[in-house]
Length: 200
Length: 358
Image (cartoon, rainbow over all chains, first blue to last red; front, top):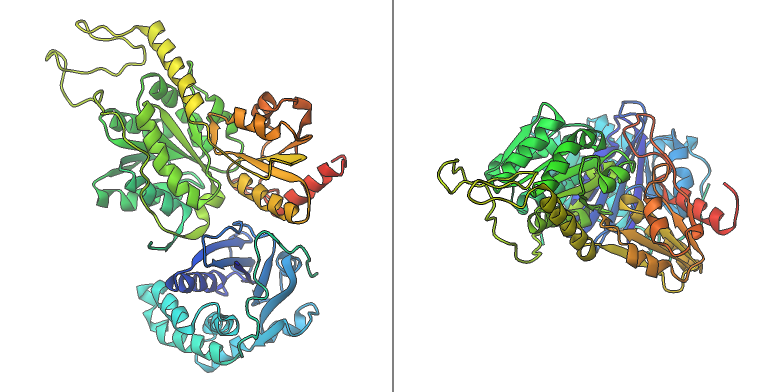
């Protein structure tokens, strides 16, 4: 069983940082991961898609995922890069402020969190990514909040230590903003019997 | 087991150091730049030397010098850089210097370069093409082992997916068995002492100990490559026993094809896959067996048709063989293009099964 996830945002929103935080948190918990990025020209403002696969055994998924069972959406833009690649019943965790601009999706697979508002309340709008990664961890149970905090600390460079406290608060605030899913692994990929049904 | 999140380039460098590599002289070109960067960062701490060569030709010849002195040495670049290294690779093959060459390829257009070579003489280069980072960690170490075992240059062929995808990996040491002593290595003894040694492409010896001479030497080299061809061909296959269609692909392409074939099998299609793990020696006999009973052989490669020659040489009925790949780059011309996508590969396979004309 492999849990595969796209993170879709605009370059500069911290998509790759969210992806790496999740990957490192999974490694802290002794699991295998694959982490790759798809960028639109390596620039601010372009499409940025992060891919994270978490597995109890060595990862078999491809470095370019044909589809995934979950999406963290930070932007409604570039939906064509990820929307058609979500498997049927996929989980979409979206920034609340963008939901009105997303294509119609069936509840209860769409979960929203006011990540930017929470981060702004904590004094750092830039920490929205940390809020949403905290929410994703708590929602799916895929990694613990403690592991996410440790993973965040592991990769923040020395010259950005001043952000540690806010980032940690943001992860916990995100975790507190959602209720855990009843069947969190329902959207994972079962290898050998791969689902082919896509949602538009 | 210690899992760490590493990109392919860093994992490859760590595997090389674990294999005992002590010298790297490479040339930075995308996506091989990170390789020389990580080598520069990590080799000195392990007692090694890394040189960012001013040209590819300098780099590979420096590596050959270090290898002649008995050190595990390597050079590397992308395929464009390896083009310039061809003379030195041929020399290393013909003067029997073990050398590892990393080709972090931009695509899959270097198959001919690796398997046919561009230098002079009757030589071949063992070429390992891992499908993912797990296999790469083993192949890096195997490359140094095979180079020493046969005193030959060995090419490790990766690509940008391998170089840049990050995975949790455990860099562990592989044991491939004993190696002969390096009784040929240059030890600094100079001429006139009676104890100096010579490494020479023409197989000439010294006044007191004449070598076999060019013709006999090159005959022996050719015989050695024939022997390697019978011993070192490696492949991976799946679902071929009752397959009506077998899809052949190498490197990252092999992993994508394996994924799609698994998917189609789960849907009840009688399809299998075959992946040459060594591009040379090409696992021709194994491919012949794997495709003996099938009615269709599809070849997926990101080029205009290179490996397909080897497939046609080995499949019993060459008319069964059809290409489903093609040239595919991104806009920069430095990266694998949109064809390396499970959804596209799946569609191309299905089109071939349904007999549609592309």
